[in-house]
Length: 395
Image 1 (cartoon, rainbow, N blue to C red):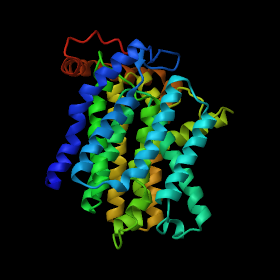
Image 2 (tube, rainbow, N blue to C red):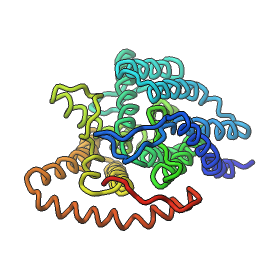
Image 3 (cartoon, rainbow, N blue to C red):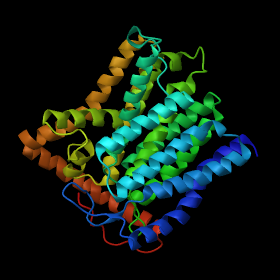
Image 4 (spheres, rainbow, N blue to C red):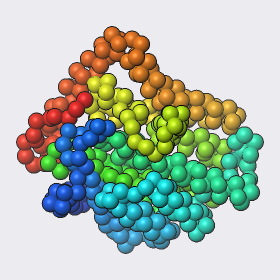
């Protein structure tokens, strides 16, 4: 089998397997009452199955086993093992609930296992702020910090239908291109498998009524760990004399993961200022503000994904100008603050100080939401195989 054909089949397998696996899992979850019930901070109007992690891990394993028949991907074995551990504890959290202290400790252990056992970790700052090589303890500490930021950032934004899978698909698509261009075939196949899985899951998570399913912590931890691994600089450490990678890789990661990083930092600071735990759930996320404004989950996801793509574009423009690495990093961070923090602050400023303007924007957002209903109903018919129930999603 040619490599090009393997690339195509790797991306397509999730579209074949997920419609087979997902309905069976939904049926089992409904019978066992393994669902997420509506609540004060929940955005659904009725109970929804939360076993997305089981669907994701099943389809991903099938895809990777198929890939391994035609191409050796043994280099991914440590990653897959750690992902299985994260998935297992995520399922425990979905079913019984685990303390945030235990989950944080588990994540640190898994990150350190990858750091010591498979060299996944921050090895250098590539000249950012004048820092290149770092002592071992600094690399280990920064690795843990970055890993926790990425994994929990993904978990934080998984609050509306389609957002986590959409951002995961964007990251997987970008890293697929990156790895293909630089001949990291195993990582390219891994990213293609995750890309196909995220796109297929997105459709059922957003549009399906009969088979609607949430990722849950098991799915978000699985996806978060993938993102941490696929953007890890150590995976690129054999690349030499590539100016864009060696000089601008850190800022590239910030731009690519801007929906995770900036929302996590703002929400954590917001909660700590109010003397609350950073892990205590509330409605202070950007996606909550967008939904309260009148956008449905699909349009709120599109808005946040558009900001992400815009930030990647800003990174590319600043990188191609060959400007100073530290200045370029500052510009990328400032742009992320302006787009993600600025959107949240602007919405809440209008809500508190200019209610009439807020009401006009809200009316426009509600009209936009109504325009998406025919598309949502059409997709539901395709995915569910029957006429969907009336849309009762709270916006």
